Image 1 (cartoon, rainbow, N blue to C red):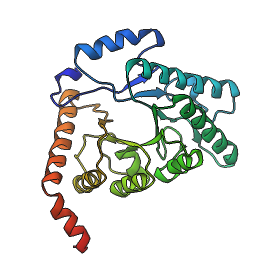
Image 2: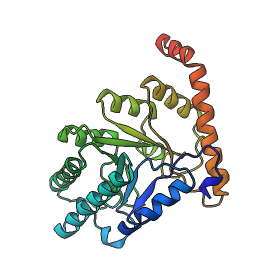
Image 3: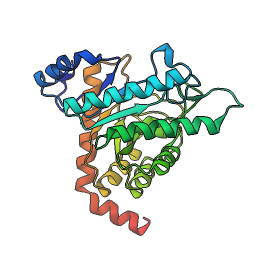
Image 4: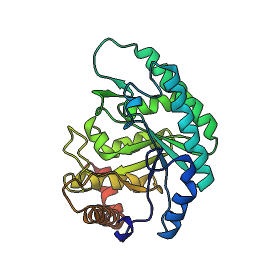
Amino acid sequence: MASQVKLMKGVEIHFPSDFKEGEVEKVQALMDKYDFEVPTICLNFFTDPKWQNGSFTSRDPKIRKEAIKTTKKAIDIAKEMGVKACTVWLGQDGHDYLFNDYDRAWEWIVRGFGEVVDYAKTLTVFMEYKQKEPRTHVMPANVGKALYIVDELKAKNLGVVIDVGHAFMSDENLAESVALVNRRHVPFTMHFNDAYGYWDDDMIAGSINLWRYVELFYQLRKVHYDGWYDLDIFPYREDPVKAVGQSLGFIDYVKRKVEGNYKEIKSAIAEGN
């Protein structure tokens, strides 16, 4: 199905849900068959019930150890496949009710990321933030808290995923989030979708927030972003091929329009006009 989308050049894959440790050759063969790259291998710590009380910050030391071990396996697989990054979204880490040991949770999450980035060495580990869902409070929740972890560890190979819908949930300005991450010289990648702002709607990119996207692409151009333009959408009722094609077409269109009018936009911003 993915091969039917004209502008599509790669596929993010989740470990260990999309494939198992012994299926690397099979996955690589599929990528070669359709001439796809793998931008990053994503860790799935959110669908299996064993992670329901967290992974990096689980109160069970065996679960924490397994989460780190699984991440290291993904890093090994990424290096074997020539993939340059792994992405970690801790969807089940955080809390729902009040009265928690927040110091302990932050100690574990920082320690966990520290261990995996040390193991990864030259491979980049992208940390994806989100305010809520499936927990009422997910760790890390926003771009500032993600940058706090990066700052604690001082690791050059620890980066951030800026997901459009996740940023909107925290009432972030996308362009400002890009500026903040870039100011800290932190590697980052983008997940594109669209949303109304109070939930992770994962809708077709550009279907709601046109002008926020225009400003975002201006900022990406300004910081010379050369990473992937990843999609994270869930077309539950739409034709998935058309939804992906429309999203990529929109991204390509806005990117070209901003490039063609970059000097004019820059001048207008400088004048406060």
